[in-house]
Length: 422
Image (tube, rainbow, N blue to C red; front, side):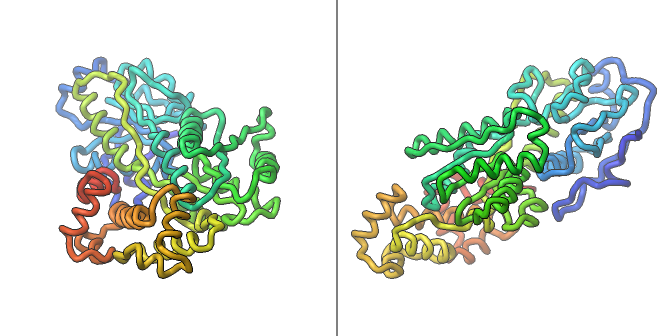
């Protein structure tokens, strides 16, 4: 099978932006002998990519790689558009200078090829001495735990994929953060036999697991596909989402999340930025830098809240009313007294109940929701800082800039530079 041209036949998923105009390769008889000779040659670098386009994680990486090639290339790219379990076509006859690939069995031959290779994590925990792209499991699990705790939930569970290191890492971080808050999380275990892991069979297995959990329960899933499976399992046993089971995924794969019923809340990852940094590192390696186990982290940016976690599990009516008021008025500079007026109790009593249930003051909650709203606009939109300030009720850029730096420790522009897709 021929390698696919990423420009002429199957463009990298655009995400609303123009694809990089990457040159396509031509077949050659054999790989050039030495990497040093490649580095010194005045020619367009040839790069092999074996990253899936079927899911947002892979598409995001490819988008970042394409952006780097557009700005600093061009690169001649050989990209295989098949699934990760499909065979890798013959590549040894290609003049390859470097590669960015998933660590699946079909790419094992690249390890001994003598060219620089960057692995995007799939199966392993470490790839040294090869560089790797690895998700920040601690930040992802912690963000998921905070999301559920903020909604007053007290029962928690994690549904992952047992065989993958990245899934185990997210589950461990989720449970550790909950443990710090005084809670435990039930861990789903997959069926031992492979036939039990077929979609229909595992859906029934998940349904029985969910049925035994105390309700309402918050379920973090290792990715959006897993979250979709949990939602479908809930339907089998008559559990409502989010009222009985709140479900959160990872990757913010819009095609999965928005087509689910109900739509899935998900943690967005800066895969675009990671892809860009991976391409930059590969460029340096092709030019002669050494592979030394460098790690390119994929960090979470924010949570895109959809219907699957759009709930408050707070039984105290005044605290629930206060939380609802704060969320509805995230674009206004409300004060504690405004929140108190939305309840039937006094400020002193409300503060006491707030701290007992949420372990923070009303003022802290106002500021937290306000900053999260600013982050959502910084990362998820192309609005200027001036427009964001106006949208959020601030009287100017200086006002919102002071507020944001005080809460986060970084400037608005620096936060957007680090986390927003480019």
